[in-house]
Amino acid sequence: MVNFGLINEWEPATGRLTSWVASPASLDEAKGAPVHPTPASHQQEEYLLTAARNETVGFRFSRLCLVAFDFQTPLDVDAMTRTINTFLRRHDTFHSWFSSETDGSIVRHVVDPSVIDFRPTPHGEFDSPDAIRAHVETETPGPFNWDCFTFGTIEHETGFTLYAAFDHLVTDGISSALTVVELLQLYSSESQGTPSGLADVGSYVEYCARERAGSAALTLESPHVQRWIDLVHSNAGRLPTFPLDLGVASAGYARTAHLSTTLFSEADAEKFATVCRDHGAAFTPGVLAVAALASYEFTGASNYFGLTPKSTRSTPAEFSSIGWFTSLIPVPVTVGESSTFTSIVGAAQASYDSGKELTDVSFHRVLQLAGPDHGVNVDPGWSVPMVSYIDVRKLPGVDLFDAINTGLFGNRGSSEEVFLWINRFNDATTISLLFPDTDEAHASIKLYVDRLSEIFTTIAAHGDYSPSVAALAT
Image 1 (cartoon, rainbow, N blue to C red):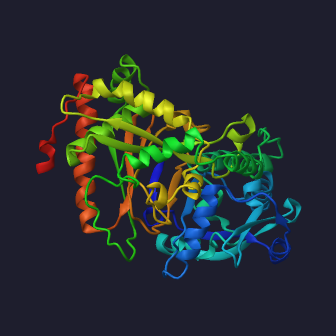
Image 2: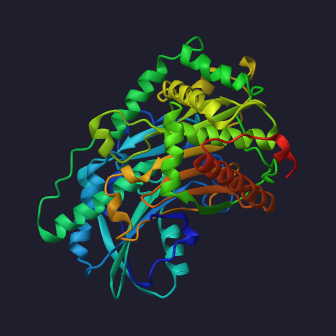
Image 3: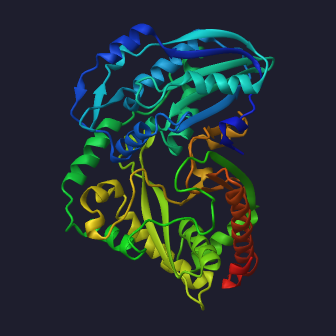
């Protein structure tokens, strides 16, 4: 099973650490990279603007994504150097850097991939995981640096651990899994002198151009824009919030906390999936229907404004590409006094199908078109609760992940909302949550996870679940 969590929960084996960072000559070439006409994606642009607004908070506000996995062989430094440079040159998400201009705009610069040159630096023995974690976080630059990604190995008695750290600007969840598989294949190829067999990849810059061309054609009168606006209007002009108290003050920052636990066995997951199928729904809408029931029990509100991430990859080559290919889509679900899981899961499927039509309509673009004058009251740097379902069994190379001790980790950053992932593995389905590190949030998350677990297991055992607002008293 893949290890998920925060970087401070990563427990690498100690040993001799070598890191790969951009060479001075490569950095000099990157600084002179010309302006490129394609803007950042909407999501990247808002991420960078938010990072700029919070650059003086005293900690890394932007999100750092780390993947790590083990090799049971001695390290070949030269082969690893070739591996890392081939990987970076293959994916053009790593060829761009962004400048913040005096007029507030974000401008893309594109580096010639032939000048990308990451070189190894030995750092000697590290005798504690704390020291290794601190090194990785300190050495990896922030999102306004071209080289906002680093790599490293930790050699120990049984082999070595490879880690790759990226600012979220250049990657996403699927990309993290692809990174593990590709680095594994590339290193095997480079160390053994055999072809890698890797598929051609698409261009993230071309994806950004396609997104921007589509969004430029949108107006307030566009039906998809109006659907977003109508959804916000139905939520009193605001985006949704987590249904329980998180103890987040209106000013200041809360760091991020993490919880992962098992929801149910694979046998129960299949029973839940069967109930969903029998009522015309897939697993993802089933998860959102459960979230809607929990929200109703905790708030008594009939309208659940669910949001779930959706991959924006659309071409065969993009499915092999690294980049931030995700957007949020709305999945509203209505729950009433007489509702049960089986009575709403079909509607959740229909809502999910409808939401997928908005995959390429970024809410960031909607906010450029609609503001308070249109009944949409959303603050800059907004955050929303997110519910995601991932069938990890379908990810490429997943059968290797257990064998090589794969881990996916993020930094503590800042947290205002709850991000929830339900992950289905071969033997169990787990739930992972990132949330504000406050006493109130820890108590609320326990209540919430206990309720979700009860709903899921009841459906698996009995085929249905009837909510009760009596839960409001808990």
